Image 1: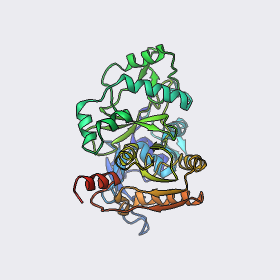
Image 2 (image 1 turned 90 degrees about the vertical axis):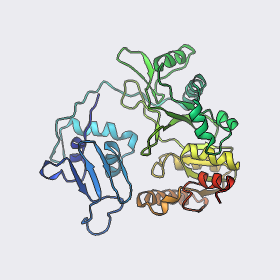
Image 3 (image 1 turned 135 degrees about the vertical axis):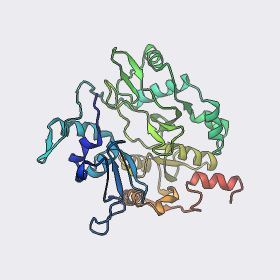
Image 4 (image 1 turned 120 degrees about the horizontal axis):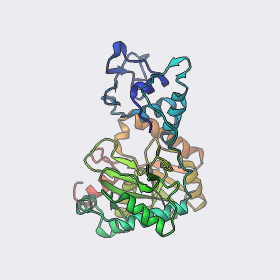
Length: 355
């Protein structure tokens, strides 16, 4: 098992090491300190908590997030790249601390095909239930009980992960390469233990489940996480798949977040495509190319209104628009009241009399 710390990774990045062996220090934020020749320093790196945060633009995260941004490495590939770099104990003449322990017994499996992932996730979700508080939470967002059941939302299991895996194997399914599953120290297949939250199926344009996101309870930061077994023996990380809510139509909305897309579709009947994040565009062009073949001719973006004031989100949005433009498809942008941040909030607010 790899145990990484911020002190191990900083020498791999174009960042200064903390002066006077401090446990917390500031560097220029790559999202909002682009002007001034690096004189402004708003990004705080905490070496004790292994996190970073910019109070100016709100950008924050952990070790892998920091590495992904500074190296332009897809986050799903960060772990393996760090291992390769740390294994040599140096990079570009810079000494690497030896506080990280690295073993190579946690070889991941190649990602399973869509048919097997869909079969495993479909059966898994029907084995689980949705707790009453999660049902109420979803209803408060404008979804009906029929909508919720149709989307097959479920509460993450708190016990019995190995039993669930065993039942899936007994009906003839393969768990190799299905994100969220791995083999434990006993050699038995099991499902990764997740913090409590709502499991959200992420579907392709044919309705097949590509992966599962978890909307975690009791957290405001990084609320949505993929069901993933990255770094575990025979496990597999999720790959940032794009979600389709509703049938393919000539004009589609493009937003951020599978659950948000589901809610917008259920409230309006519109076809909605969702990237997992405004900076997670790995499958965007491939997905749009497939949708164009199916008749899509217009894309209207509908991202949360905080993109107007968040430089980090604006950069991702600009890249997204550039990719759509290069494909030669007609596009535009919807704007609405900024106090109702998401389009789902705005639509439900109007329906509920907030407008």
